[in-house]
Image 1 (tube, rainbow, N blue to C red):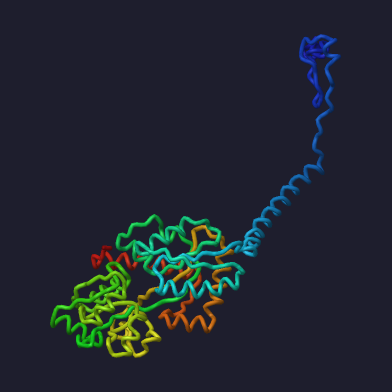
Image 2 (image 1 turned 90 degrees about the horizontal axis):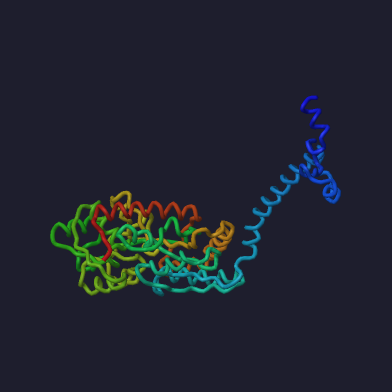
Length: 372
């Protein structure tokens, strides 16, 4: 008798039938009688095997559709509570004026309150840091200016990276930088400035060490080849006051601050820092027109939010902001405050931030500029 034949003749050596339950070897007959016989395990048929992949595919498509619809639903329901616009500077400046013009009209569009909060300190770092740490839900926004990209160049200490930790939404406007001279200085243009600097020691006031205005004057010195001693003030207005009083012969400040003094004949404008003439100073040539090319610097203003701000909310804020800036009344009020509206979406803003971070860093190294 073969091995297989012996196995078949001995019950407890027989192989179990698939799908059934067999008693363990050497189990007594009475025990086996009491054990239940389980029903056969179902075996997937050919149609079932075809249906299962189809169900998985349908579920995947549904999940993708839900993922696509969810952001749109978020934008449609936003905002769900009042929105804060953080201005990291004191009241009265260009950033503050812009924020309040936007807030008054955006709250009418959004059906929620829009509150401007001034959190000044450390050249804008304190207020900006509060936005970086805020939830990325669109209810906390930041109205910044180009000071933000100057701080890293002069070694300003902050806990955030302007490119990594903030979501760019849109550019808002710009204010040129102007060099003003006291009438007794005998300086009306760049050529006369260079000649005066060669004839006698000159000094100039700025809005502070490491500010955009300070950078522009150092660039003028490099490009035109003259020397002048820097006097840093705590803000632009004290510099304007001292050049009016004759304590310094020159001051480089935000262009809008000198407009009334030019009209009254108390100051002269040597030039402006943008590629195009400033509408409020149409008779004042740019420094590019006077031979310094390229030279295109301004104080720009932008709306931003915390990093990871949903793209659909960014798009809604940007579209509504552009709608507000297109209003004639808004443009007139901004012009009176010295701010020129400036077009540019989040992508353009991101490119500007990246470019300015690089060029201010290069200039800081070349001129040895550091924060005080």
